[in-house]
Length: 366
Ligand code: SAH
Image (cartoon, rainbow, N blue to C red; front, side, top):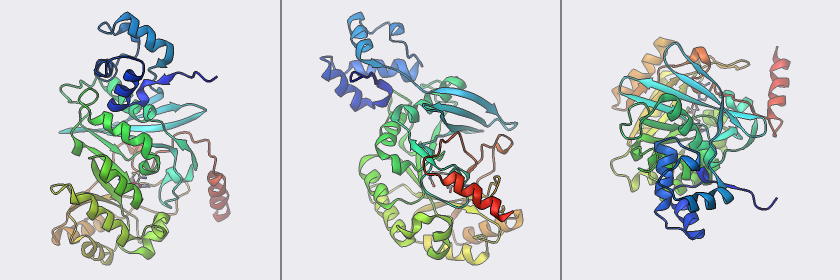
């Protein structure tokens, strides 16, 4: 059928304004609609009392407002919540909410599975199915806001969004950017720019494109202080080695003089957690306005890595902090519901056959 309905949650403010213009309506009508969808959680056009009947009929004929649906919700003993979000065609992704005393962070997925093959990440073992649409990305925020009773005006429950769920957000640029626009739009979720963070495994051209198009915080998954080790952990490094990646980070900061880059560093026992790694990291980041986020490795079935000991983690942190780097250790949250970093798996109908290859490999090792 050629006249498929357009899902209005796929459009950010500019897209929606253009859409209204294209159907012969005033652009500001888009703002009314956004407030209903994102402030009031209303998706039924007939409940939008200040939208005229004629316009409602016109919209109903050509479009729909359709967020994704929740398959189930799990809540951890520490208050962390995880939703399995239904993605058409038998797929599902995970979204995680992490409450803290002064903020509430939502961790959002960008793809069904992941096409990168980071050796220490469980999402990678699932293979890849497809990119999420904008409505599926912003829909995760919409669903969480509904479940949490979030009030867009007071911003109490949901204060930060991190694109740190399943997938590589910069490989789904065209859907993720409009979704991040909606997160920061006053007619939608109204979060401050710096409270929306995109995390990347290091896609250099994507960082440059983002820098021009979207003012959000940037996090980079570094995990190793030299190319030899990073090549093994993050295979994308072979294409964009550390020097090129850090140069892209510096370029990102040129127009954002007060910002800094967050570097994620997952600590794996005996792999990247030695004092020499910490010292090399200090050298690497000395000239970069940065924050280091140390993540104790979270195990998952079939992995060959182990979490570093607590004493090793503390020693690593002490070395980098002595050199005046800001380094925090990311406390593991929600591990009783498999909601910790690198544990998100969802349901991925793998189209790359990687999941089958990984399974065969791990069975061969037994
Ligand atoms: N693809 C993006 C977004 C994912 S963010 C990126 O790589 O940045 C998820 C973060 O958790 C990344 O820093 C990732 O490297 C880290 N991570 C993955 N597996 C992990 C594991 N098993 N334990 C701890 N951290 C992990």
